[in-house]
Length: 337
Image (tube, rainbow, N blue to C red; front, side):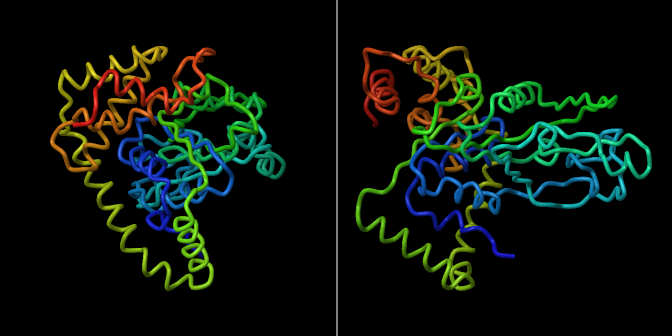
């Protein structure tokens, strides 16, 4: 089977790649929203990320990837209780998907052949402990958005269908991508993404040529291309695993917490989700860099991704969200050392 384009071979788009790496280190950051032009590598990056994610331990036949037998749902008909190592699931949620396909439904085949009521798990079950990817997330139908919001808040999928009452864990990293010209995202869903990134087509000739060269090489000489880039992906994966372990001992002193709070206050960020995301993202970046503690430089680096989608609209300020965040970061944190 052909493997996705290697993550390490993606040219540029550094902020997007950083955001995805940070969520791989700490899934608690809450996912990534990537908005920008078509053909800028959004979907490629998500699919490439799957190769970097550390594998998970799960019960072989558990439909929700439970890590141990005692955590498998009672409705699951297990055919194997062996604990296996499998890739972290990365599940696509396509546009136009039905609610039953997302949350699960009555297994019609079993109902007709055996006359028994059984649950057929949906995409949320498959995505548990992994990633759920939605391309063109801003075009998602409202009733599916409502459903995702409920599940994202509770971490549990509850299904009431044809006399069935089913619930199972549904904790996943949400990754969405889209083109802002095609529609805006509902504020409630926007707030659920920990980080947001804006991508655009490269403007300089050399970068565009390098993108073309690598993509052409991937398609024309797949084996040779993968052999070239596989070691770089393997190194990156090891760094992510090391950062995950390092995260447990990472220190965040009072000054860092104060920087996070002052930034969010200055930007008028609603609630406290901005501070928490900023702290988690800064800590994940510090762990990725092998630092002993989170510094102001880490906060500064992740602030645009963590805060640009949490700004209140200001009709008197025509500057883009990235510019506004950058301006406030300079006012609050000062110039970089």
